[in-house]
Image (spheres, rainbow, N blue to C red):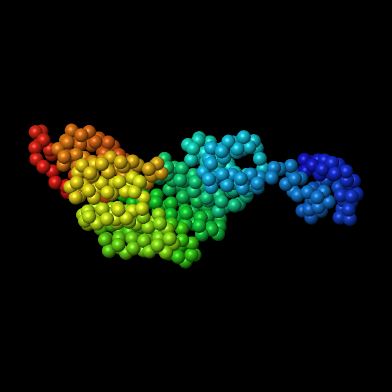
Length: 407
């Protein structure tokens, strides 16, 4: 309390106020003198009285920086993706020791997000500082969001098990401390948990379906519709992988209707591309697949080129199919093994197109890349297609005779 007393005396003298003027009727001059000399601790009421007499707030008394305008400025920069500017402004400030306030923790969190976007190694330091402050302040919902950030950082490095363990640690703290979790935070945690469960080798599909339905029910009950269209689409795709086409169509229709009801064009587009995927991979109705690709409203995306190329392959337009398949690139924000597999399958289709065009040597050159890409992925619906593709090339006679028909 000695530093606090010194600050009171310093400000009192700067304002040219006497001990009596500050003490007023609330306390004696002697008591105020003891406080200023660090020999007595003011109660909350006494401290509030002194602040009123000095016409300052507690932040000014403690000599702390007012972080709120900086937080607002950084949030604005973040909304405009000005990550370099955020780090340029925040890095010098955050190198110094500051009080453990909510605003300071927010700035560490913002800095961590920008550093991560820019692949800056300081992201880990910033987020750990934010986590510590949020936890010590018992701001557990903010702590949970910061921990989710760490989980996502592992997810982006394909460290799925580590990411899942962090999710479990969040759930454990919330449960042990009997914390009321904000609905959105709860849904964010549950959604990432489901995605990570999907990423596990030999994952329990029955358990995952149960979790999916629980999250959808929780969302409806609390009327917080976070990623609802995504969740319906996940149920649909899981149904398809389990050969339940009735459920696939039921939940994909739900996803589409929810996207339409919320006027979410992006989610509606994803529904269209899933329909194209279904007709390419399951019904083999390639004309329908092509129809849904043409309705997809983002024709510059790789997923459009991929599904269009697959449909054209099915229609035996091999040269045109290759034109589309060669334009496919994996977006930088793809981390989930099933999403990666969806894109990696492009090499198998390229190989089949090349074989159909009697360009066997080019087809053989792609096989190692195809196998490496799928090697570390968990079991997925494309495994048999990959094996069949390799077998087709291996079965080609040395004299390269014979025609290959798409399968």
